[in-house]
Amino acid sequence: MLTQTSVPATSPHVHRVAVSAIFFLQGLCFASWASRIPTIQQQMGFSDTQLGLVLLALPVGLMLSLPLSGWLVARHGSRWVALAGAFLYAFTLLTLGLAANPLQLVSCLVFFGLAANMLNIAINTQAVGVEALYSRSIMASFHGLWSLAGFVGAAVGTIMIGYGISPLPHFGLITGLIIAGVLVAGRYILPADANSASTDQPIFVLPDKSLLILGLIAFCCMICEGAMFDWSGVYFRKVVQAEKAWVGAGYTAFMSTMAAGRFVADRFTSHFGRARTLQLSGLLTASGLLLAVLVPQLWPAIVGFLLVGFGVSSVVPLVYGAAGRSTVMSPGVALAAVSTVGFLGFLIGPPLIGLVAGATSLRISFSIIAVMGLCIALLAAKAKL
Image 1 (cartoon, rainbow, N blue to C red):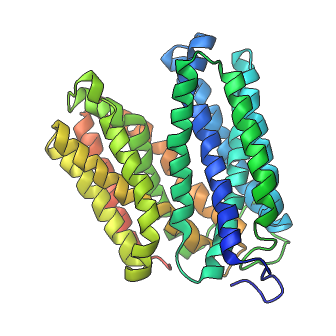
Image 2: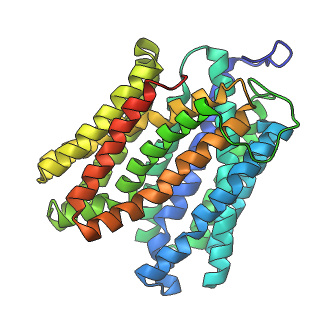
């Protein structure tokens, strides 16, 4: 809980709105970049293989930032790291539009990833503090706004492409909106963190058993998320054999229920508890993937992907919330430790599917991913939530 001296005079609702706004702006920034990847690929003349190699720069920046971000939050507090991360994130988005050659683009993507995770760790630490003021689960609603921003960013990107507007003015507009939003919302985020420990924190900390279990839950969930992000369209094209207009239906179904699920997850968690919510989440993820595998037809597969979206929607918010309440280290360092384990799943998932699919089939690889959902349910019974 927040200490007596750190409880802010401002209404908890004001802090919640401010932190929610920054979550939304963070999602808008990422979605704006993602929506213009095809345009930048065409401008740079990248093949699919070259584009894949260039895009690796983003997770490299994310991974480099994980221990540094936790240490910065512990040392200087999440307020200032969140503000600095938000401004850096916005400005590096603009540099992606300015990049004139592959080397510049790769360099900018590394810094884009670094800024993204600096903001991610700091603003999730803020969310933990706001949740402590409410004394109930509200973490999922913050992540829901990130997902909602993804739809808005994708829609804006589609409009920009439709009117033939290049990435630079598009990114310039979004950068301006983010800076203006952060200047307003940043005044009302929490001045002090919940469960603040000593500022004398090491830059890298191995998670203890309780945090390791949380990290493994995030790891399993992010393998499933990575599979949905990168392989849902391929699965619908090759396995479901959907018509061209329906190839993206699985991804759309997954994203829609993942966003919607985050807006109802907090109420569900308040009624049934964190452990049961995670167990149900794992079972929904596994059953949705198995439905798509066992009945690879259009509508059963769409229903299956809808279930997967609901399943993964609450896992990362609940895990981050539990990590932020750690009593053995500061929230920022705990979040960074759990994120490090979890993010490995996001990196491993997509290539794992490709390797297994190449040796066997996509249906078998998706069956293996379904096992990750069952692991979430099993690990939730042992987690300290």
